[in-house]
Length: 147
Image 1 (spheres, rainbow, N blue to C red):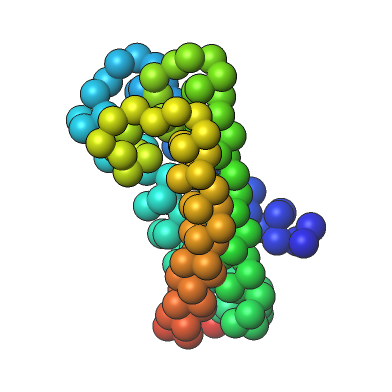
Image 2 (image 1 turned 90 degrees about the vertical axis):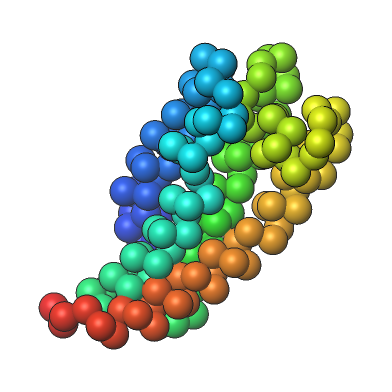
């Protein structure tokens, strides 16, 4: 696990930049419809799972299951951060992209309890998808040149 966390350092930096950008755009009143494309944690995570899966196979000799678990790690990290920033948004009474109704798949603002249920489904479901995506990246890793 320590090796995986070390390998994921670049992702963690990119995740912090993306999460901070989303937070700031929301707190500076950039309309969600205009700004949510610029800092997408979901897109960052999917693309990262693809390239990490490929690189882990070719250059670090990870097996398929280990690359998939790495994708799960990225997915869990992203979703826990989104969950925490959603809680912080409600706790501080801020309108951010983390508690925006569209981000919570709702037609109108949700109370904290309902928002947490929505976010919890992401914490459970998203890592499955990121594990599969990392496995796909691993399969594509055969196209990369050898060490």
